[in-house]
Amino acid sequence: MLEKEELRRLKGDIICPRLDVFDGIHEELEKGTAIGFECPVGQASAELFRKLYEEVTRTTLSVDTCTKGGKFLAYRATYVCHHNVRDRGRKASAKDTQCPWRLHVVSKTRSSMSRISDNLHASCGLVVRGLGHHNHATDIPAALKHRRVSDATEAKLKSLFRHYHSPSTALQTLDMELREEWGEEYPLKAADRSLLPDLSYVYRFVSLSFHPAYPSSHPTVPIPIYACHSKQLITMQ
Ligand SMILES: [Zn+2]
Image (cartoon, rainbow, N blue to C red):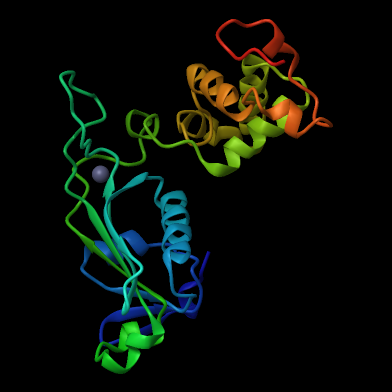
């Protein structure tokens, strides 16, 4: 994470020398501050920023709209809070607070720089701006339980499955690691779905991760034992 001493101010906006977000970034965005990152131009920078931002603010964002591949525009997207459910369907969701928070990210191509009068874009590969406010708490179990499972957690699950864990024992292992790592903070961490998903998610994840084609293309990787016993999962041949 960036230290505040590493930030530079430009007419009220902020320039960061790397994509790392900093403590207090959400408060700055809520105030209307534009934040530029001196990073490579393109979608990958925007997506990496989103993940870092989600981790620090303990929120989950979804892509609402995006444009990419233009002559002067490499990538533009609007992210919305996951408490704003787009496909509401018939059944009301406890997650859906119709949260109005928006985050706009823009990455302009270098060929557009001669046309740019905005100094922030001229020196930064990615510029982000916030709009609105969350209409719910973000650091309570009721909100954390809806977060998207993180890439790091999925990587741990895959590793556990390769070591013959079942979904239940893999989940128990994640739980135990959180207990050991966070001590008194464990209850709040355990409520965070990005760190500790529910069992039904773990079942779905393993069935997708260990697709039937998997053994033949990766013959040296052991097949999880439980996969041979559950009709809910896959039949590995
Ligand atoms: Zn929200």
